Length: 42
Image 1 (cartoon, rainbow, N blue to C red):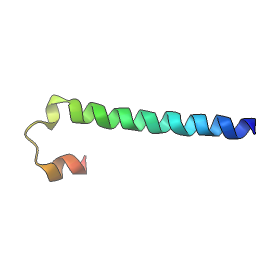
Image 2 (cartoon, rainbow, N blue to C red):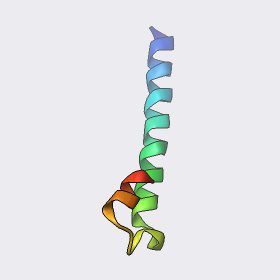
Image 3 (cartoon, rainbow, N blue to C red):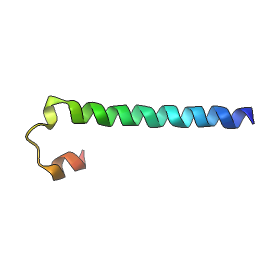
């Protein structure tokens, strides 16, 4: 059962990292002025 808990922790850690990357991208100045479809493709 310990390995399962460890795997879940690793999964959520990776998911959180990807989420933070998306938030950072959307919060950057580079996103300003882009069309919705351009933002979505990023």
